[in-house]
Length: 134
Length: 388
Image (cartoon, rainbow over all chains, first blue to last red; front, side):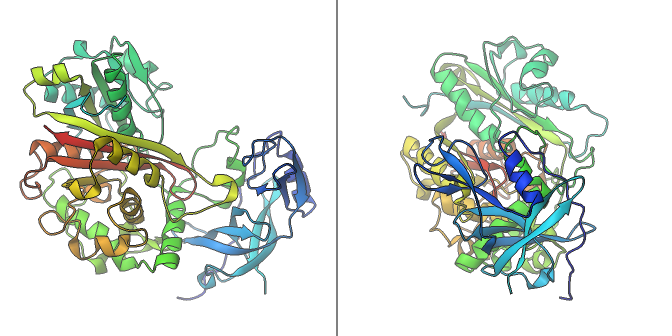
C-alpha cells in the first residue's frame, strides 16, 4: 500500500470539567499530567479526584514521562482525512486513547515505542497525541 | 430468587420496513407494539408494564406511554445501547416474578437510514460525561472502536481477516431466504476481504447495515402465557453487566459477555453445549467472534477458528446463528440490534423461522448482545430461552 500521510485533521477542542482544568492548563505548557493516589500508590487514567482503585480522595497530579507503546490502533480510512486512532500504554502503566501522528499511517504497528506529540485543536488546548519514538 | 420460567415471551414482532422516510419514530414504536400484541393475541388494554431504552422519543418512557395511551403500573428505561432490549426482557421477567406487572411491552424503533446516519459520526456529547474530553478529540467513532479490538485480537491470537469474514458469509447464507433483508446476496470470504477498508482491519462487509425499523416484544406471566394460543417460550436465564476502561487497565481482548454469559447459564442450569440456536449481536464481524469466546462457545482466542468453514450456517455448522441474516445483512433498526436478536430466537423456538434456516427441534436458544462500544465501554446482556 502506498504511503498514507496523517492529514491535518481538524480536532475538536476538549471540553474540560472542573476536575480536569489543571490537566488542560498543563497541556498548554506541553506537560502530560497523570493522577496518582497517595494512599494506594496507583496511577489511573483518565484523571479523577476520587481514586477509582481504592476510592480514597488523596489523589494528586504528577507529570508523565510522555513515552509509551502502542497497545492497538486502527486507521480510519472512509473519511476525507484518514487518521490513526490508538491506545498507548504509558511508561507509568495506564493505557490511554490517542492519535498516532506525523508518520506514514501504513507503517503503524502494535508494540511500537512512541513519544508525546502535542497536537493543536480548534480554539482549545492541545491534545496529547503520540509519534514514533525513534 | 430466580426468573427461571417465571415469565414467557408471548409476542414478538419485527417491523418489515428498512427505510421509513414517511413515518415518525413514535409511529414506528406504535406499529411494532400493535404487531407484537396481535402476535400474542392480546390488546393494548392488557399491557400494564412498559419498557424501552433511553433513545425512545421523550426521555425514556414518557412520550411513548402517552403516544400509545397506555395505562401502566411498572416502567423501565435502562439504556445499555443496542443490547438494552435483551436486558429489558430480563428486567420485565423480574418485574413479573415480583408481581409488579403481568403483561410487559418492550418497544424499539428508529430511522437512522432516513436521517442520513453512516455510522461514522462522533458519538454522544453530554459535556458532563467525564471521559468525552479524552475520547472525542481523537475521532473515536463506533467503527474504529470495534476495529481496535479486532486489531488486538489478531495480534494476540493470530485471528485473520478471512476468519472474521466467515461471520458475514454465514449471515449472508441466511439472509438470502429473508424477503425483508437489506442484503440478500450470498457473499464469499473473498468478497468480504476485498471490499473497501473502512477502518483497519474492518472492511465494509465486516460492518452491519444502517436501517430504519424496529421491533416489539410481549413478556407475560406464566398464567397468561398458558391462556394464550402461542407456543410457550420461557425466559430461563439472564445476565448483564457493563465493561469499561478499568481506570486505564485496558484489556480489549474480551467483552462483558465474560460476566453476563456465565450468570445466564448458571441461572438456566445448562451449558453452551446445550444451545441449539444462538442470536449473537453482529454490529461487526469481530463482535461475534469475541462474544462467542466470552459466552463460552469456544476457548478465548479460538473464535476465529470456531466461526470458520461455515460453522455458523444453519444446516451446515454446529452453531446456527442469526438465521434472519442479522445486523450484517438483515437490519439494524435505530442502530440497535438487541431486539431483533430476541425476535429471531423466538421464531426458532416456535418453529416459525424460514424453513431453509429453521433448526430442527430447537428447544433451547441463546440471545446475546453488546451495546455501546466494544473498544471503550459497553453493556452486555445474555438471555437464555426455552420452548416448553
